[in-house]
Length: 100
View (cartoon, rainbow, N blue to C red):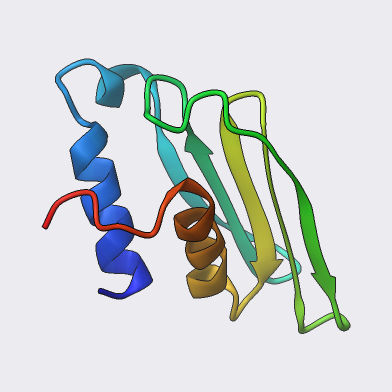
């Protein structure tokens, strides 16, 4: 299962009639250009999880930073790092598919 399919399944598994109304997954673009991913972990099985920053910086067109703090996964990366950011999230919260 690729990262996007996994993320869709993870999101669907969180939707319980309440969580999806108060918490969110945001995927946005940055103007440098790049990606920004915010995933609220409150009310999920990963609530309380923390991670130190993972930072990769090989220049303007090859960079990524991800962390978990304050009940949120945060990821930023260059224009080709969306799949990698989601992959880090997947690795940190669990690689098993939430819904088979």
